[in-house]
Image 1 (cartoon, rainbow, N blue to C red):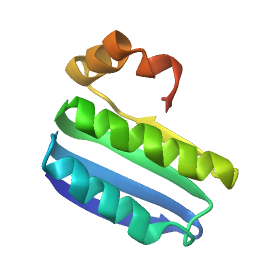
Image 2 (cartoon, one colour):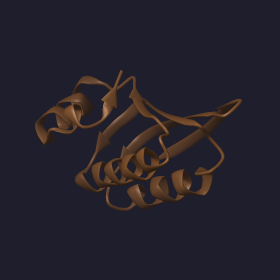
Image 3 (cartoon, rainbow, N blue to C red):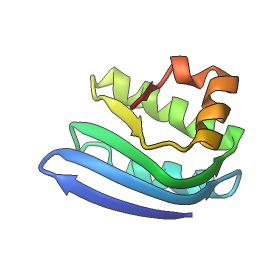
Length: 99
């Protein structure tokens, strides 16, 4: 998994490439948490994401809860059909904001 971070003033865009699984989900969690307090909105760009496991989904839900407490929006964009199906089957498409 590769993570690229770009700021546009106080908005953070994190592009995630590869796979989010049991091992790499910990890295994603660490990268997001290291930036909390530095942004007013977080967008995760999954254009190059091939797969996300339940561990990755847990990171997204935990992140959403943390950010929601501070009224910071989380948006997920550019997901492919395979990842979209994982979100749909898990019901996360109704919980998370996906564009």
